[in-house]
Image 1 (cartoon, rainbow, N blue to C red):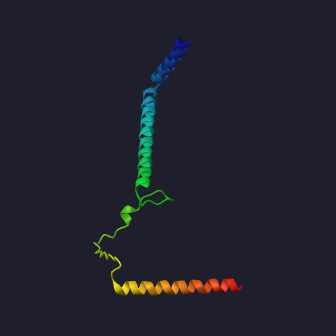
Image 2: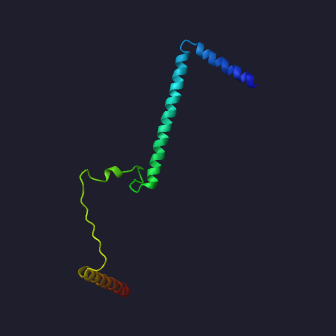
Image 3: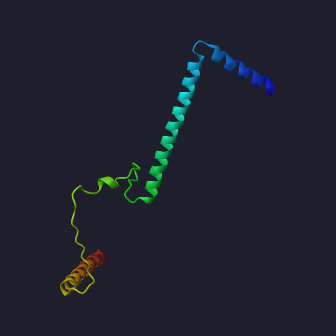
Length: 117
C-alpha cells in the first residue's frame, strides 16, 4: 500500500514537471510557501514582541496593546525640580492641621444632619 502511494505521488510529480509550465508552477508554489512562512514568522515575532512589552512596560495601552513610550516625552529638554517635604516646615504643618480640622468639622456636620433625619 505504501509503495502504491509513493508511485502515485511520483507519477503526479512527473506529470507536473513534464507539463509545459510545470517547472514554473513548482517554483511559484515553492515561492508562495516560502513567502507565507516568512509572513507567518514576521507576524509571530511582532505579536510576541508586543506581548512582551505589554507585560514588562508600564507605558502600554491595555486596549490597543501598543506602547506609547516614544510619544510621552517632548523633543525639547525639560527641567524638573524635585521637592522633598519631610514635615519640618512649620507653615506646611499648620496649614495641614487647619485642613484636617475643617474636614473633621464638615464630616461631623454631615453626620449630625443624617442622624436628625
